[in-house]
Length: 145
Image (cartoon, rainbow, N blue to C red; front, side):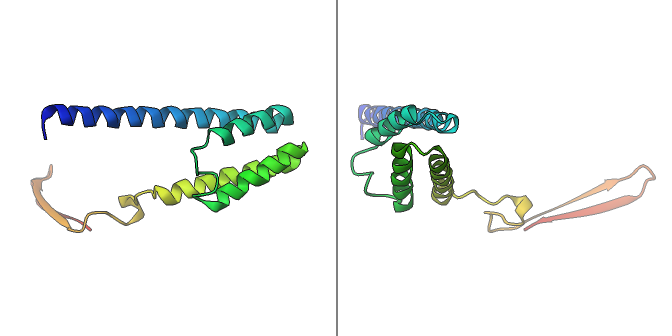
């Protein structure tokens, strides 16, 4: 593979990443606006914002992916369209909860060493010997699981 091919591939990757980040930011801003509209009881603005979110969804995504989230959007849309702020708030909370759960399942958090688990399969052992202020020699053995 030539240097120009590598550079071209890198540029495509960077372009894709920038486009993805832009769409992600736009979605987050739209969801924030939707949340504000619903919380303030402005169902007209909420309806407009929700329609924009649904129209900007990638083609095929409305009927694919996580069916729970798709159903949550349908429930939210019905509540917003009916003008029922209380139902819209409940539907929005359910959608947000399910989106967080889906994100957590898609990107599981690594367990930390504080959790008692480690990604390392080998254990490391070290020892040190030192002299304290009284002149006594002490040895310390540290093991990590």
